Image (tube, rainbow, N blue to C red; front, side):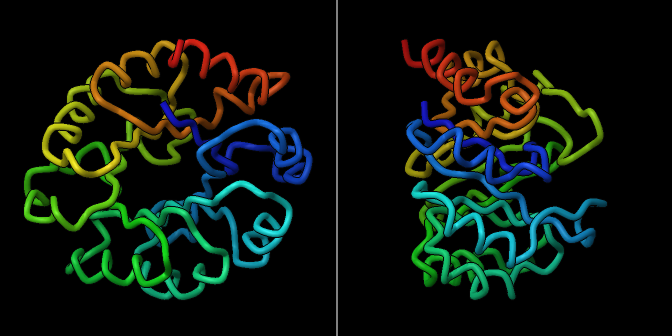
Length: 213
């Protein structure tokens, strides 16, 4: 299981401290949610902060674009050598074009799915996807918790898109992580479960031990 700390859950006044705690901890990437109120009612990181994060860490970056118009972001994020860029299926009229544009940045191209969005209409993209991200809680809902009914959706994602990485994101604690692994998830985005703890790096290692043995 590959683990990705979500920087949006860190204390915004102590981002450098959050980054430095993981300098010598193996992680899949720093996961950055990009939100501008157009898709959900929150604002997270602008390009100035993204650049600062890029310059402050040796870890790869993954981006989750929770924006109504993701197209300008592809080129804007390209200088930061993104490892992954996820764009929401709900924001795209022509997702195949977006996936191609993402790959032109050098990133793996992924689709993200809100809890209410079915996977089946996107089966035609199974050969075009590098990764799929299933939201396991309402995105950025205040205090939204992991919804166990979405474990079946993660399992369906792994089954429908066998050549794509299967990611899960949203309110994931250790027990949920174990259930998601059994369902077929290969990557977990971890937010509050890490950054609400006294030592996020130690908490991540606890996750890793529980999930990988």
